[in-house]
Length: 152
View (cartoon, rainbow, N blue to C red):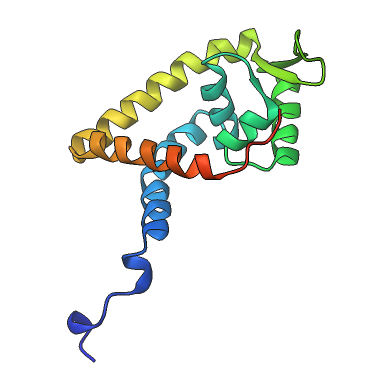
């Protein structure tokens, strides 16, 4: 069979595959820039999340796409490196909130600026990116409603 007349592969039109592949391709560029700065992707994700204020370990794990035990190990290293600190929640002592430490606060601004610059480059190459972001936020919100909420 002629390659030009071949039926498309399933994964080339499968939404989940397209989302994952697009994320990988676009993220890889930025991840290379992070590595050049000596910052791992999980550390970047934690710092970016904490730039908005303290978060629970569970919230960080979900947002950073890590299992909770892995997130705990990342946080252990980050705490040892002086990037974050953990404190019991004042209202619910069962909860631990993660905060940026001064060293983490000093790093996060430059990293956010680099992320914004990379995003601007991507948007310049793909003018439909704003509409794609709106669609992805809606997809995440709708799918998120179907998941059972977890504590913490």
